[in-house]
Length: 49
View 1 (spheres, rainbow, N blue to C red):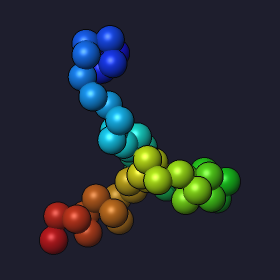
View 2 (tube, one colour):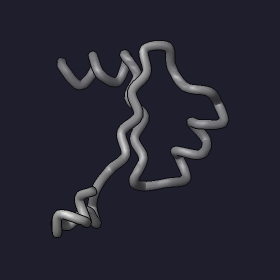
View 3 (cartoon, helix red, strand yellow):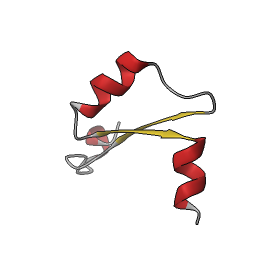
View 4 (cartoon, rainbow, N blue to C red):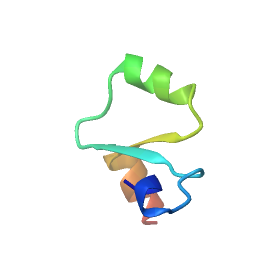
């Protein structure tokens, strides 16, 4: 959708949010990709400090 509007999405990040955390497989997969960020409650509240 961003590209269709002519916007540069080359540096876009994929943020995944969870209240309950993430599976080990997802954490492993996300660690291998620079454009993916996993945000759980610990990360969210730590960032607010």
